[in-house]
Length: 453
Ligand SMILES: Cc1cc2nc3c(=O)[nH]c(=O)nc-3n(C[C@H](O)[C@H](O)[C@H](O)COP(=O)(O)OP(=O)(O)OC[C@H]3O[C@@H](n4cnc5c(N)ncnc54)[C@H](O)[C@@H]3O)c2cc1C
Ligand SMILES: NC(=O)c1ccc[n+]([C@@H]2O[C@H](COP(=O)([O-])OP(=O)(O)OC[C@H]3O[C@@H](n4cnc5c(N)ncnc54)[C@H](O)[C@@H]3O)[C@@H](O)[C@H]2O)c1
Image (cartoon, rainbow, N blue to C red):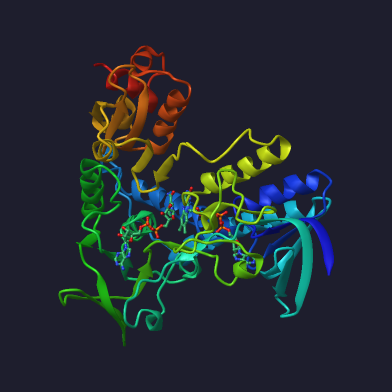
């Protein structure tokens, strides 16, 4: 048993920078990881999925330049693509491991941690030997895992999730995806583009249900044009292993058949098995650790960060939790989690870049707004790229014309959204953007036309 000033449990998007920060203050710090260093984003989330997305985007666009007189007949090696994805992921995870191991005062323990009491954790190591350590302060950054819906037989058909899909070496000829959210749609398009027959089953009547209906319609239309079939308002009821794959029976009786099923039906926090009761740490009925605005738990010297603490499920938000904890260690009460902007980008092609208010939310809250909207085909750069699909919607305050939120379904829509997010943070208004000199012909230049009232 050793005593540390700080123990960080989980090496996710908040845990690694936090542990390095604490150790660099000259304070003895232990970081515990039960799996690969870097957490979901690096190993089974953003890094591999966006590596795959970019490769497939390039393949797709290289096959769609008939307008320039080029017809491409190419062969495609799925195994090679997935090896590339795993190589990139491993490089980033190993880089993160090296950073930890090269930091003075920082120790990496490999194994699964749980609390014995509010000052002690036990770690079940990879060698199955338990060790116990104590600390003055603890930081829980254990993330979340895929939620497996209650579907009869689902576990016995060996479903894919984000945890094992990047290990595939053979391309499924057909794929059923349960869930029409971020993971479901990103994978649906990727697999459809490489020739897999893809069906998405979603129990709500809309995919990405919190977006505006016109944006959802455009996005769904694009995916349908690329070969994705949607089964909306349908819950899967029974999964069965077949001699040549799997079948999934939906409510109402329709049965789909495919090589594989991918489950992308939301995530649940990794708070069970942590011994939180032994430490007196409160969780809510969804298993989320209850935290205050500076991420303190019900126990004064224990903090929780990232998805396990109910932070919006994006890497940049977990990372911002690290900034909040860091700021409060350096100078208490300077930063908290209240009123944070939560930008995000759905990495379909084209992107859906989002931040702040959309029409759906404004109507729900009965808020007044002025809407500026324009098709992407009116943006010169998008036309020049021959990627004019989508639309821009920006909500502004009707009096001050300050920007309240944006939905940009369009080529590089995430990058475009960020320009508006920054304008919003800096109090730059719609008329100011209409007069602003953007370099021609960039996508952002489209804002000159968008904001003509
Ligand atoms: C397929 C996919 C694509 C995604 N794409 C994006 C994207 O493009 N952009 C974006 O912003 N977000 C994306 N996300 C979401 C993003 O990955 C997560 O929001 C982010 O990783 C959450 O970080 P975290 O710090 O909360 O936890 P995690 O990154 O999940 O880290 C938690 C760590 O704790 C470890 N752990 C758990 N329990 C224990 C224990 N008892 N002892 C020791 N260690 C433990 C886990 O092994 C893990 O390494 C994606 C997610 C998925 C699944
Ligand atoms: N680009 C990004 O930033 C990105 C990419 C991937 C994941 N993520 C994060 O990861 C989180 C998890 O992604 P996700 O796609 O698993 O969850 P999600 O919450 O985005 O979507 C889940 C979908 O599954 C549907 N669903 C739930 N149970 C179902 C059932 N039994 N049958 C059929 N449909 C069902 C829901 O209606 C919903 O549409 C996201 O919320 C997001 O924050 C972000």
